[in-house]
Length: 64
Image 1 (cartoon, rainbow, N blue to C red):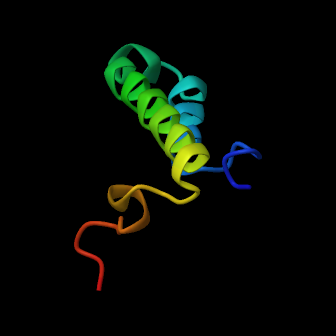
Image 2: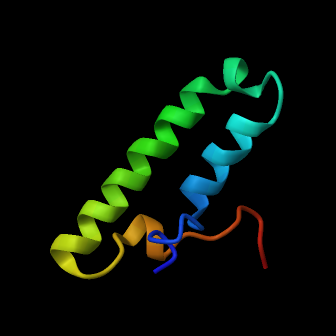
């Protein structure tokens, strides 16, 4: 549901890159990576019905 509403972290990163002046030029590679990761996550959920391990087991670095 989060992906359908464009609230997933991949889309949010892409949105920030698009909206912050000058960031598109500096973060174009990250934007492309986020689009690809979003595509992979969506594809995986349609086939397996769940998130891949690197997405469902993800946490912020250095989090408690």
